[in-house]
Amino acid sequence: MAVCARLCGVGQSRRCRRRQRNDQQDQGSDSDMDEEEEERIVGQRRSDAGSCGGPGRVAAAAAAATAEPSDACEYGSGHNTNRGGSNTGPPHPESLMELPPELLVEIFSLLPGTVLPNVALVCKKFRQILNTETIWRRRCVEEFGMREDLRKMEATGVSSQDLYVKRVIPRVKSGRFMKLLPDYEHMDYRDVYTHLLHPYRHILGLWQPDIGPYGGLLNVVVDGLFIIGWMYLPPHDPRVEDPMRRRPLFRIHLLESKKATVECMYGHKGPHKGDIQTVKKDEFSTKCNQTDHHRMPGGRQEEFRTWLEEEWGRTLEEIFHEHMQELILMKFIYTSQYDNCLTYRRIYLPPLMPSDLLQPGLFKGTYGSHGLEIVMLSFHGMSARATKLTGDPNVPAGQLTLDVDLSQPVDLPELDQQRNIDVLSQIILGIHEKVQREVEQPASDTSACVGRAEEETDGAAAEATEVDHGACADACQSGPSGSSSSPEALPFVLPLGVMARNEVYPRTCRKCFYGTGLIAGHGFTSPERTPGLFVLFDEDRFGFIWLELKSFSLYSRLTDHLPHSHAPSMERFEAMLRNMQSWTS
Image (cartoon, rainbow, N blue to C red; front, side, top):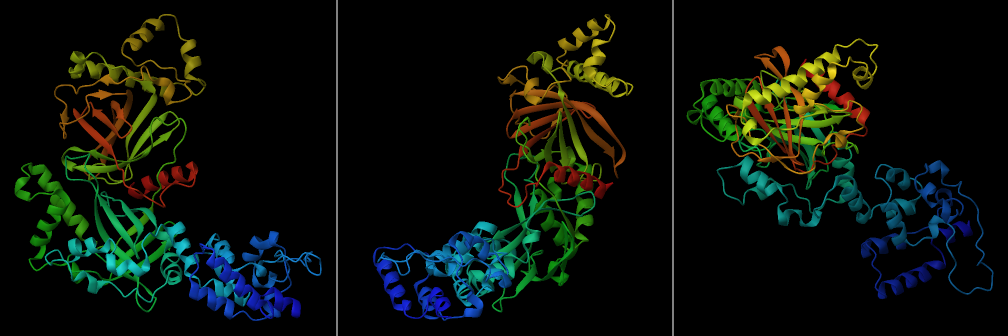
């Protein structure tokens, strides 16, 4: 009993330990632990033979920290060689219990927050140390990226100041938003971790809402002391290189009662009651409990004018194209019926592979009268694919909008010939016919290389013609990097007659490839893949010339920081793509 009492830091060694700790503090100890909490922990140490157990070795410290309470007494019975010996210096600690509190705080700060409750059950000493704010603050920062200080939250207003002034009460000047913030003066990091961050950790990341053909992109992040669901909106057409716009749909925060509450942020009357339900893995739904907050005094006309200004940055009178007016009105009627009661499915960013032509990720692209849409570019062997995250009534979200064959590079002709749409069409259609013939070959032809070697000698002339068109490539190349004809920038110009929503496009490119784009009638009727030209301008921009439509789409990278969104593996990412296409099929 006396041995256990001495190992737990009570009895005759108490004053010695306190003097030793004071000497270390006088020498400039940089402990992160609060002095009052440290004094309380040391002052409250008592012998507890049943909970502390026998002395264990320091080498077993990590195992003891994550062990269950029943295992607390199973970590050895080592003997201190300094006890009873001639060495008059301080004894070397052989058990986790002998370590000073500031060192235990540092050790526990390195453990995942999910195992800390088990550590608290080992003994009273551990439970007292785990009340230290330093431990939980580090967990909030490292696991969830929280940067703000709880004690300074009200003074700075967090990012919520802009959120409240601009979104919740747009006609009121700043100053009233402070009344909407809960009182965080008596809240600590442990409460934030336990009651907010950890319970809702599964909804952090990227999600696609189920809004019919339109889809969308939702990013759920930790923003100060809130978990906020931001709906990402493309910039106003046709400014494809402008940054993304964001609109808050819901938020989760702690009340003074240390209970997390969900609030709907849709509409212009301020936050109101909402609910979040986890349907199944990688899927959750939101519900607004006060949809009357979404209504405006002027009725549907005022709601439509406000939505149009946010969505398109203009009024209906400024949109002269009649077909575009119909598409806009159709989207408003369709999307407004949900009243922010939506189901979301998780989406991942594609992993980067060494053979990728460029960094995969999210891009904004121009789609004619449908405006700007968001696509996800990913690489699959010798194929580059762009999948729609936002869509339209013709080609809905989740569909494969571009499929680029990286084994079919295209050498552009001189600038004067590039301006001729007929010359470009002849080149691309020639490659398209060759690819179709290779697809239709019998299954016995296991390799395109062997098939071409077995062709008759008169096929050499046709192959030479393909070389002149820049369409020949060894189908057995190991990666996209081997298909480049020149690493230098090449002059590029759009053919005459090809419509471009953005007149400002790059005048040089790196590489060009044959590809196909998906087109369809209204309601996704009669879908077909039409040949076109994929143009890589730089790491952040590419384009696609739709030959049949005689139009050009420019794509620009989405550069926002998107935490908790990367795919665990390529297999999980490809499975997500297959599921995404099934959602809209």
